[in-house]
Image (tube, rainbow, N blue to C red; front, side, top):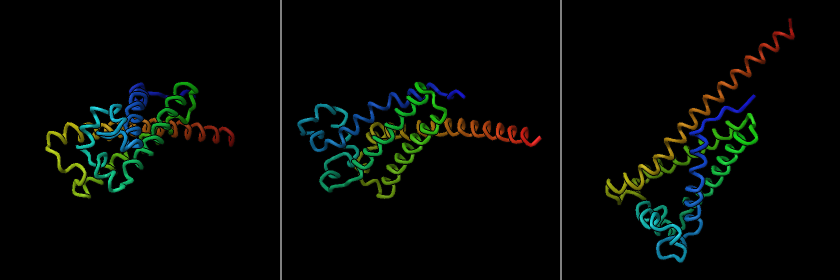
Length: 182
C-alpha cells in the first residue's frame, strides 16, 4: 500500500522547519540572542520587535526565570523532528504509517499553540496586553494564528486519510475472515 501524500502538508513541514529552528535558537540562546546581546544580529530585526511585543520572549520573562519559553521551544524541537520524520517516511521510505507521524506532529503543534493563546487569555493578556491593536494583529495574532490554522488543517486532512485507511483495512479484514470461514 502506497503512502497517500499531500504536497501542501509536506511543504508546510519543510518550510516551517527553518523558521522553527530560528525561533528555538533565539529562545535557547537568551540573553545573548536578545537586543543588546552579542548574538542578537542573527535574530535582528525580527526579534528586536518581537521581544517587546510578546514579553514571554522578552526581558521580563527572562528575569523572572519563566521556563515556559524554553519549554515550548523544546517541544518545537520534538515537533520539528516529527515533521522531518513525516516527510522522510512519506516521500523517501514510503512507510505506510507515515501519516500517523504527521498527524501527531501537527496535533502537538496545534495543542501547544492553543495552550500559548489560552495562557494569554487566562493571565489577562499579561505578556501581550501592553500592545496596540495594530501591533498585536501584525506581530502576534497573524503570525501565531498561522500555527493554529495550518496544523488544524493538517490534522483534519491526515485524520481523514487515517480513517479511510482504517476503513479499508477493516473491510479487507472482514472479507478475509469471511473467505476463511466459507
